[in-house]
Image (cartoon, rainbow, N blue to C red; front, side, top):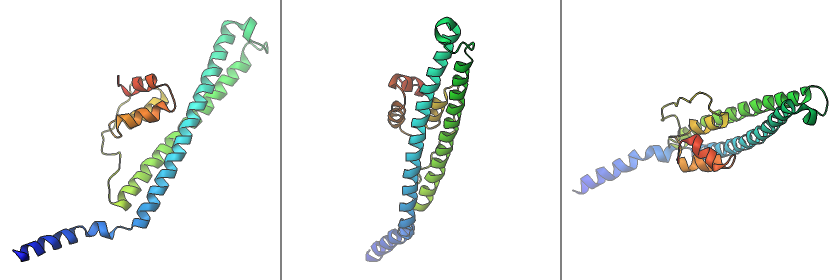
Length: 175
């Protein structure tokens, strides 16, 4: 009986060798890199939000100018300056969205590194890929990418930092 207890105890100790053999310094460094990438992604999301509002404002100004040029076409250039502002804001928004996507990709890469170095799977690749409905808003698409991979409450909280909660609920398909 004592021999059986010894064998079980040794199996447990040797079986946990993988955990004991991990390089915890590398794990800590990878977690720190993940945190910094998450901060950068958060800043990029804020930039997208700011540029989205700037574009919406420029677009509204252009629409007003086209509808009521006698009032809103201050340059008397047939709203060309307003059109230019709108196009510039849209180009900036697309650039910011691209940057955000790059940071989200970097987060995926950092998560894989953490999974490897810390011996704990935190990857988001286990969920099946999603297909987005046509015309899905760019920001919404980013959150939808992580639906069923992160808790819905976390996604709602993150989304609500950048847009009204009712829009986030609509985007995520929750009531």
